[in-house]
Image (cartoon, rainbow, N blue to C red; front, side, top):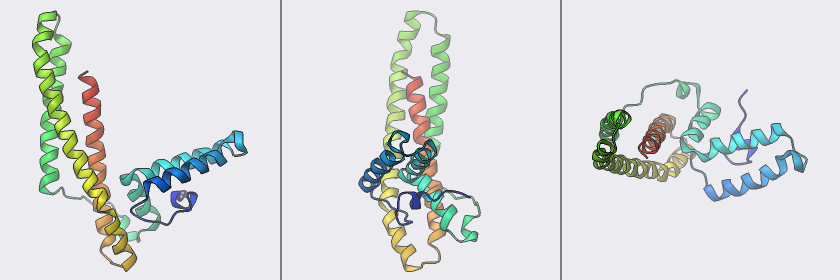
Length: 190
């Protein structure tokens, strides 16, 4: 049986969470759960795991679906990307491919002159990835700002809300994955 992260934090099951309240509760619970304070390693691990789940919107929504959604809403289904998400996906794929080729050239470069000649291409590649990363972050922030509206729909008994929660979770997961890919490639380009 899966642990209920919301119950561990004594928080209502909701799509949106107050980050400051979550952080404050985490600080208090982690002190109580710490083995040096009378807790145990198991309690501390449970608190840390619950915190990691609740602080990440895509993980939180996935968890909420797993513990609270009706069975038909739990079924995995493909979530189509809208035009703006598909545009980011295509641009990122192209940028990652181009930067991978650049990294291959850098690895094969043996002379200082050859490496210096690649510096401009490297800077352009980093700037492109950073620009895409800013766009991904903007999309993520916009999606996160709409989470409260999903809570309102959930509270009103809207039957379609679970489908929209699942779609939002999938899109947030895509964005988180893309952010990780961008960070990883930017580090490789340093």
